[in-house]
Image 1 (tube, rainbow, N blue to C red):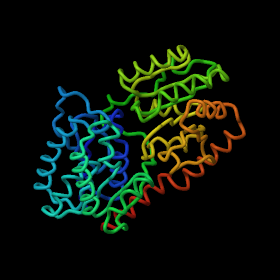
Image 2 (image 1 turned 180 degrees about the vertical axis):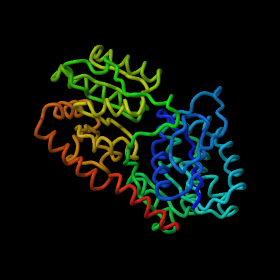
Image 3 (image 1 turned 120 degrees about the vertical axis):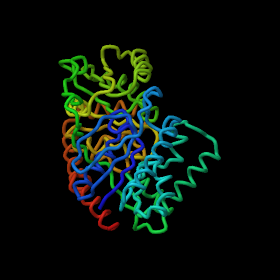
Image 4 (image 1 turned 180 degrees about the horizontal axis):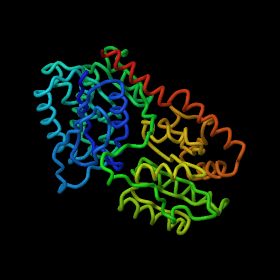
Length: 390
């Protein structure tokens, strides 16, 4: 079976977090699909046997693609549409796997080129327009909602990545049996094609000061991630655990500058460190050497991809009690706290000091991951979906 995967992302760039595309494509190729992956010009080529990567022009002078909707993405998606049509004319694809907004033009092309369509739904796109403050125009949001409903109705299979998104999608589908909940739960190291792109995990000495216990956040620095909450909570927790050290992994220059000013104002100079963007292996190294990992997200309903790696890590997790987390984790497998500074401070302190509970939480988290989210489970879900389409 020959497939076209359309990924409207900077593939592969850790800043664009296209890990889900990488793992989906890797497993599909392992299961026997011959794949062309069409993506943006930005990014680094990866080594996936059986997969050819095709890129639209880079347009580097327009800057880098950021997380969430943007005018730059809309511009690039016009070229993505043009390349898609050209590829469909030249090749006979049995299957098109459309990620995110690329499904909007894929379903329109489906009756012309007669392929089966997978809609990989990472989020509700109308909701993203408001979540990222892109627009509040009711007409535009309504147009996106109409396209999304049409794509859900016309796709031969719909993948969602978390239970809440699944409950949103299924009532909008004429046949819910076409729906597949496949969480982004595997996290193998991404294999880059060029040896020059490999960055060994060499930690910054300032990020791991001797004699300190690490509290680590790794991920994007968008407002919904709740890093202001984490910084304030850590300032309170450090009054009881002065040996604690906060490590914040990720973010761009302007985000780091703003949060560093907040940390300084909360008395954390010398007690926290911002790494900026780092390679996937180094981010995993920092997380694996933490005493506590954190997910302080304050809004949103999509489960963070990193939550599955955190469950399997052997390091206790402190996370906010919001639907993005509670649809996957509970008090048995992590330290769940209300999204307030005092509650999170108490959670951080307990995670650092309550050894018996730490051990129980870590063991339960690993058991949950192995049972519901492991690589074997992930591959079986992907196999079931492809067998249904075949």
